[in-house]
Image (cartoon, rainbow, N blue to C red; front, side, top):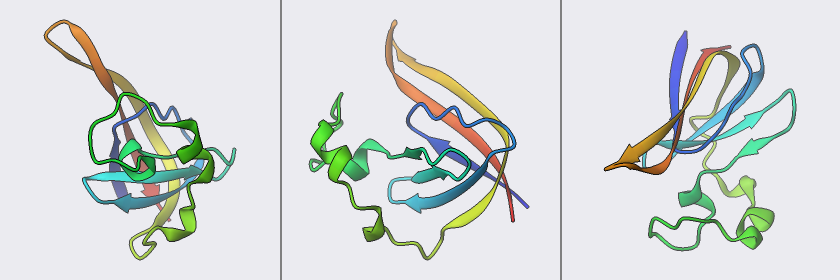
Length: 105
């Protein structure tokens, strides 16, 4: 079964890589590339504030404890497609989005 994951960040995970995906509030997800060990943390999870900050303080990223995530809907699989794009609003870049297609184990 294939599942599509939309991330509001740059997450260029190569096709064929094994991933672990934990869906999180606000239609985003925590993704761990099991082949490289790289973790992709969405801003609204690591940020202590609820506003749409343009940066994540380094301290929050370094100290974020992923064991606190609700893993009840976590799934693993292999990336079968990945597309990274830039969002824009009225002529300026507003952020990034990644679309992952994962073939679930």
